[in-house]
Length: 105
Image (cartoon, rainbow, N blue to C red):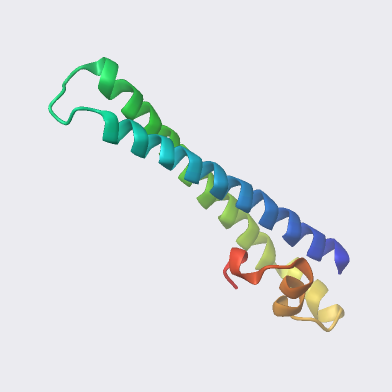
């Protein structure tokens, strides 16, 4: 059971790191976008904004994929069977892992 709790905790830490990275990228994008002249068509100004926007999109996609992977494992029959054998439910495992707000359960 501790194996699943450790798994959830590691997934939670990975997701927290990804969220923090995405937040940093969004701040960078906001800084670049707000400092750019809205009337400019100069690629030297718009290029970095576009690159920052793509970085945010890539980070958001990675976060979505990580969440899906975690959800797929937690909802797997193997995980459910292990919980049943241990006479536990998902709430108990999430409580062992820590912060239930991160995983959304």
